[in-house]
Image (cartoon, rainbow, N blue to C red; front, side, top):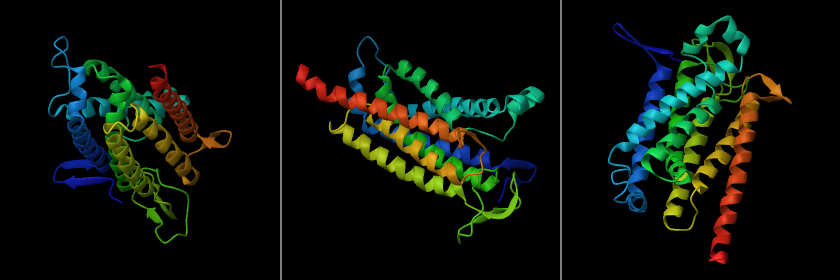
Length: 271
């Protein structure tokens, strides 16, 4: 693996490079989603809030803010999982290594909630817009984990596609499950499905919030299952912290989807 690229006097961490690539591609995906929904979003623009709707290239600003908030949240969540280590060595807060998926989700969510108010778009519809882009960005970020060998790999395996990371940030000479590769393909498949759900919603066949609920449920299930072959320590009833967070994500997604579907069905009856 290649934790760092050396270009003359420059040393570039491959993890950071792939995170930046993920954010850039996510911005293009988000902008494409805004463009296809532009007609639908016009209803939120009125003489009172003229200019509040999303303009050309605004998707890059949104991803930049949400991505930065996600990275901060991911780092904070990771260090707070081991408070003793944080107290003993506060400098771990600014380490380049150790980011928690659920912390990134929480940080990004808070930023998106703020931005939804800024653009005067209902929160659920705004989250629908951002969900496919967030999924693509996460998928590409996982390639950074693979290249750096930062310990996000799985348990030892004899499968022919097992990999070793002798030069990784967290090295291992054993052949292990390349879980970042699994997540890359799974998250891209989820992104494609969420994009289709968004297209379905545009035709009026799906209610607002359905795409975001799909994101919560599907990424939660995927991460919950992947954790069974990851090397993360177990804490809650034999589950890892990420699995516990994934269960919360799935539960919230299912309850929210049920409420959305219930409201969509009951509206015509009360009209």
